[in-house]
Image 1 (cartoon, rainbow, N blue to C red):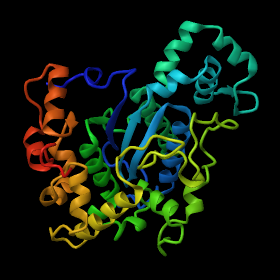
Image 2: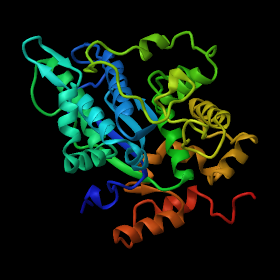
Image 3: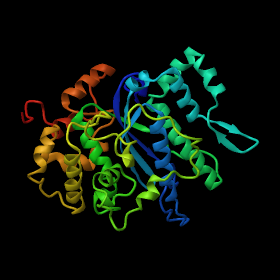
Image 4: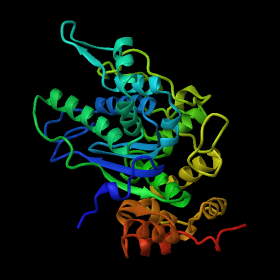
Length: 364
C-alpha cells in the first residue's frame, strides 16, 4: 500500500529529496524517437530553462539534475527559512511572476503590475498561503512538469497525459545519502553509455559544475555552453526575475546550489567542491570501464568522510534508485524516519547496512 507523500514531505520543513519523472508510453522528452525519427533534443534546453526560472522564484535549492531522453532526475532541497525571510511584497512579486497575466489582445505574457502586487499584499491570509507554496516541493514539481507537458503536447498537436505518473520522490536523510544520490544522478549518462566522462555529460549538473570550476575543460563534442545558458524563446519569463535572497559569485552556476557553503549560500555537502568533482570523475571512469574495478586509494578517504563504504560505492551509485524507496540514509537515520511516519520497516534498511558506515566507523 502506498504512503501519502504528505506523510514524509511536509510543508514548512526543510528536506532534501530525489525526484524522478518518466514520460508515458513511447513519448520522448528530449531525445531521438526511433519510430518517427523526430528529434526532440531541443526540449532539454526548454526543461533546463524552466528549471532555472523556477529556482529563481521558489525557496528551493536545485542540488543536482540529469536530463535524459525520456526521463529526468532532480535533487531538491526545500528552504522554508528563506521564504520566511521574504517581505510580503517579495512574496507577491514572485507569485505573480510565476503566474503572469496573459494579454489576449497582444497575445503575450505581461510582468506583474503595481496594482496586482498591491492587491495581493493587502491580503495577509493569501500571502501566508503563497509563502508556503513558494517553498513547497509539490508546487515546484507541478509547475515544472505542467509547463513541459503543455509545451510538448502543443508541439505534437495531441492531448492527454505526457508523464506516466506523478513525480516519484525519495527523502535523503543525511550527507551520506545525499552524496551517493548526487553521484548516481550525475553519472546517469555515463551509466547509460551516452557519455564517456562527466565533462561530456550534457545537461547534467556535474558538467555545469566542472565548467564553472575549470572553464577550459570544455569537451570537444559537448553542447556549447551558450546553448545551455541562454533562455529559450518559448519560456514564459515576463520581464526580469526577482533576485534570490543570496547570489553566488559565479554567474554561470548561480542558480545551482553550491557543493560547499560559502559567504553567499549554504552548500549541500560537507566536502570541498574539488573533492566532489574528483569523486564523480573517478567513479565515472570505473563505471565506464564496464568492470567493478577497485576504488582508488585517494577516493576511499573522501567516501569514509561522508559515511560511505568504499567497497560498496560502485554498486550504490549504479543501483541507488532500486535500493531505496521512500527514504535513503544511514541505518540510524532510516530508523528515526520510520518512527516519524509510523512504520516498523522500510525498503532500504538492508541496503543501508551494506552501503553506509556507522558513526563509530567513520575516521576522526
